[in-house]
Image (cartoon, rainbow, N blue to C red; front, side):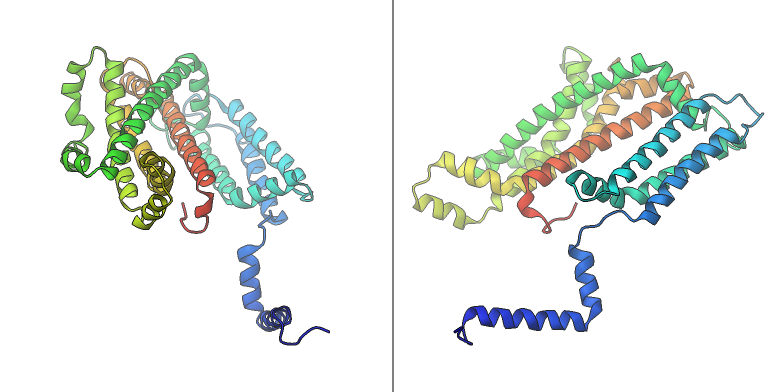
Length: 360
């Protein structure tokens, strides 16, 4: 027979008491269910999303354009919005079968981003109505969305080479500045002598604005490309150094005491203790460095580099080619947002143990 005072009986009794309390208060049960249950797409919400994009497609296609000026690119917008509508409908067909992992992932994705898709459809429709349909916003200062697509497609070769040049320059600057900042911050956090000598340099050199270095940098380097790489690297180096140093110094001393008691070498303490414990700060430094690196990249390309997105935007602005300039700005926004999203995805994967501790 089971002892009435055994731990298993006590746990069973506690479980029954908890279940009875939850059943007595449906608000607590609903709150827990909303917090821990999987969020899947609602048929009503998905229907609103598909209807919004279908309405946007039909309005752009069927409502006549204004006679105030010649409107370009409307068929491209119709094809794009129709493709989005079809893609969302196909996603909903997949999400209706959440038994498998694919359907469940698609259903979660729709539940998370449904409101954003509705907002994008509304903005696209309002943009086309105020430009191509009513003529309220006249080009070239406020072109219709189709004009941006046609200009980007017509100039796709030059725009593609500008994207590739900016990506290469940014990647090289992030690599050099990130590795240098990581090494400097690790050295400062680990060595008191290094912190003594490098701390004033970081404090006084790092916060100097990028524009202040431009007259010196473009004289000191043999070409504008490496001058731009240096500016981007310098911009990345400062937050990486400061936050890596802070992360190393914030590691509890007990970690080092335990490892040294077990015979750990200094190399082990640096690579296996200090760096893993400082990873949250390091990823924060990368997150802070990326936007400032984009700003520096744009400034450098507008002042001396003869290629890249910043140069392309400045060049089109000089020729008053505003639709192409706006198209390049949209490309830059997508480019920057994609890199930041990728960085956060890598951070969430590497720092999975921090889930529910830090929200981004």
